[in-house]
Length: 115
Length: 112
Image (cartoon, rainbow over all chains, first blue to last red; front, side):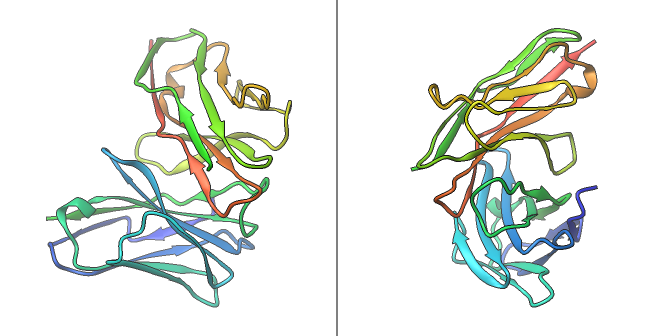
């Protein structure tokens, strides 16, 4: 158990809909990262927050947004969903802002299926 | 820029065989290097790490040595078990960047 929790575990929704994925980092970790894992594209970094502020942006679509709240939990919002958004979405947390020896701890993921 | 290249899979080995999964990197500065493992249906777990040149990370019989001269961090295990079947990801954390960079993952299947 990494200490990172994600809800829900599974989500099935229709095209055009909007969903929110939630992540609680490990106790004491200030950074939260979001990743998308699909069969054809591997593990794609989406976005990172550190202590409430956006720190780095990866391959995140404009239809997707995220935020980190004062209690350090984070939410990833996916809107106008398309079939291609079906994937596993992982949240990870780390102690530091970025760089250096800080490893990332991954949650169990949310499996999103868009029909 | 920063990137990680790891050998393509899938890799299939018999139990007790020797394992090598190659990983090379490109990075500015002096990155920290990691191997993560993803078992079926689970998230990624840290397997081992090395934070400076010539460091050797090791865990559960797996080893990898940070080689700056060849920009490599190959994963090795002397005798694999069926329970090692998983996807292995090489990754780097650059001291000058804001991202963790993952390789594409190598799927390993160990058959009895």
